[in-house]
Length: 204
Length: 247
Image (cartoon, rainbow over all chains, first blue to last red):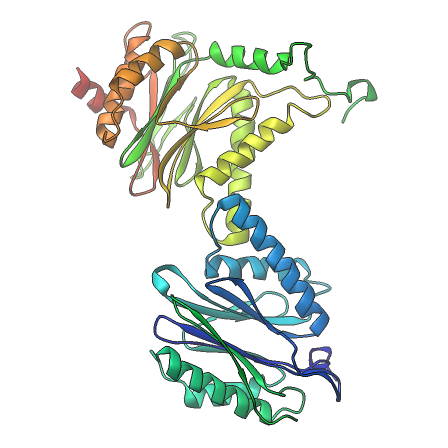
């Protein structure tokens, strides 16, 4: 079994009209055993920037702590929040620093840039960035997620419709993956508010 | 760092609480050729005297290409990034070292964040380098003060950085030989809503105030940056045009 599949994970982000949604599953497993059903994979960097990390859980937590550290210092020095594109470049550089002993995570970054334009991207564990205009996926359920998102996505959805779409895509994809699931955690971010919701899916 | 005999800091406090080496460094700056900078509402201009020590100095200028960058033997105004320029008063060789270090820091920032470095960040990092040389073993402080002119998302900015490593934001400032006259002149002439071309005229007039001999495009250097965010050193032909307008 690949080390990326040790803990199991599913993360997806989608672009809407002046808003974005980022969602993940909640299972933390040790191979076939389920250890926790409330594992947090998505974290806020600032009010308009979120990062979801899939892969090995210890690296998910450590990498998140390192990134928050870097962002806090940036905020103090530059007296402003990081733009999503800048943050993505930073994550890519930090991952590449460990090119020959990498963090075993695949980040999904989602944020609102200038003029409230949504920005999403993903990268592999050594920092190869992939920008997308519609959706990005990562984790053990990524193949199912690609299929579900491709079928359900349409451009310029408003926040409520975006929430429905990303939730259905996530729940149907994790149902096909034994290593991820046990509910969902969805953030829908507009210029004015962040809505956090927990989904109840098949609890297996 | 070298022999153990020289591993203590050469910049030590005097009983009066001063760092004498820094005072001397500021004296070196004060005997350097005058330079000045003016922040306008839509850009920044920096300028300096460029008096060559003798007529025998070969100051061949070659205008290279459509970007009109002239390759003068002695170029006192330099780019740090496409949108940040710098001029100095004091020791030329020390300036070269600082320019090299600052350019590297700017490019490192760009490589990490894929974003051009904000002017304040570059000024702070350059100032940090200068401060390190006042608290390390076996080195002396830099004998230059810098005027950094840039235009970024926060608009036009002008900073002065001293040998001690302290930096200040200025609306208009001067350094070097003629500093007190130049500053008095600038205080009188400066207005908040000045535009870039007015600022260039004012800069020329300020330089003229303390100029020994005839001012011409061969013995001054002017750099400007406008809302296009591109720092340019003016060609001698452009300086001649401005000089003619000032007459």
